[in-house]
Every structure is written in C-alpha cells, then in structure tokens.
Length: 186
Image (cartoon, rainbow, N blue to C red; front, side, top):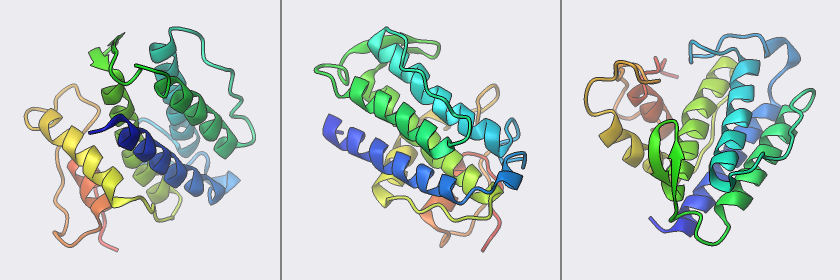
C-alpha cells in the first residue's frame, strides 16, 4: 500500500476516534471498556501515549509534551499530529525501526496505529453508548494487517479469540469480533 494512503487512513482513523471523544461524558471516564485492561479514561490515555511512543520510535527524539487533562480530544489530536508529521518526513515510511515488537518499517508502524485506533475506537464507542463511524478502507487495512498476525494461537497477544458475529454485521463490528471483542447485535 502506498505511503500516502496509509497516512490518509491514519488521519481518517484518528478523526473517527476523536469524534467519539466529544460524546464522552465526565461520568463515563471510569467506565470499563470492552478492552479489559482499561477504563474509558485509561483507553484514551493509551491511544495518546501510543501515538507519542511511535513518534519517538520514528524520530528518535522525545515527542512534544501533550497534556491530556481536561481535553481528551485535543490530546489525541496533538499526539496524532506529531506522529503524522514524523511519519511524513522523507523516507520515514520505508525506513526500518527497532521497536519492542521487533524491527518494523514506518509503514507498518502506521498500520499498527490504524488498527489500534479502529479497535480501541470500537471499545470507546461501546463503553460510551456511541457508534464508531469509520471509513471502510480503514477497516480493510486493519483486517489485512490482523488476519495474518492472528491466524494462529493468540496466547500472549493483546487480542482474544475470535468471536462469532452476524455475517451482515457492520464492518467495524466484524473487526472487533475478529480482535476478540464480544459484539452484541444492535
């Protein structure tokens, strides 16, 4: 996939995620998400920190400080902007980086962020009684990355066993079920 398309899809996934943040009420911040490790507030922090960690991997420098207190949408947007700028530098998408997950090129790092924003966007939407609206191309990219990665044993991975979902379920629900989330029919 062309670097420009990956960067565009990262922005689309970010936009979909941040639109949800506007609908998060303060009383929902402590609500448990379908991702068993995080509450709504912790999940938002995880997405923000993930963007900043990947920015650091690509640039080799400390990313800009992002204050998530009070305005989660601004924090996610700022962290995504920093990552998008880093990934947009000449050669960044082709260059190989040493990561905690092994060596990955910049394009693969950005696709990992697309997967994170999509699956955790579904988690956020579900926990806050919203609906994640995300471009179908973003979902296709996430599936294309996850299918080969999750084809075998998922032990020790941040994804549970694939769940059953209706074949006519929305694409985002099929992705969530593939990632091990229990999808309730709407």
